[in-house]
Length: 269
Length: 70
Image (cartoon, rainbow over all chains, first blue to last red):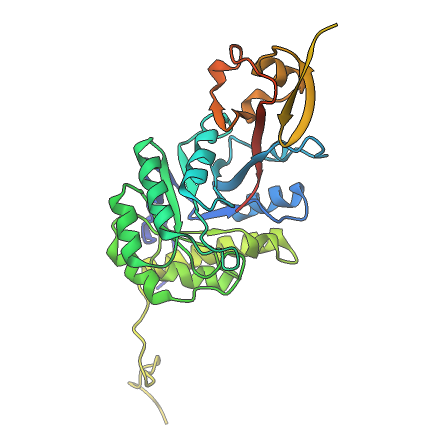
């Protein structure tokens, strides 16, 4: 009997990543920060298969030699503005209000982060929730970067966030998923999709994170900072896809002792 | 000769013609309007208001666009 996969419809069904009223095929979102140059940023984004890429909103640098936008195909990628560097709800809200005037943003999706501490870049829970409530009321599709805290996840869901984005470990740390149990509890606590944002270090982290059953992952530093960002972007794509497929396929339970995979019946000696 | 006034653009002082609008400033700086957002004295100016919005002496203008980020 040929057990090889023959038809797509024999594969576990994956109906894509839902973020509010939007749906995406790719479950990997990538950042655009910290690349050695814009060409590598572009090639990595393409290799990752991501449909959403995050960007910051900053004052125009009149001395810049190169324009980031000329490397981004707006028909291919949905730009997701972030609020990196904002320490208060007010600053984050005002930053995102600015995006309404930027035609490069084709959706109302925003990545909301309100930082509470410069050393850990951990979010400020109170300010985050405050900003989320204001932005939801203003019609934004709010994607909050948050601590891996199930109680806060529920509050953000109740505030109207159509997705929650707990961290795996601190931004740029590459420590991987530090509390997989909390991520699982968050996934069971909220009914909106869960996207793990920050901390993934390499492809196995991405795979293991997806095996937990989360809906997506946002990665920047682990790709941009790799020796070969383009190849790492492809590795992350495959890690995310493998992890999702393994989750949908249902892993075997762990057992303490061996269970023979070869039958004993018909043994000769 | 046109009268000049000082305004702050992205943290730097510039001399511009007295009584110019946000639209005049964008044209002068040859900015791509689609990828530029404007705030004057920390208040966002909507695109539809660029032609009417007059800049005044000592205004602080922020001209904003996208930048790399995670």
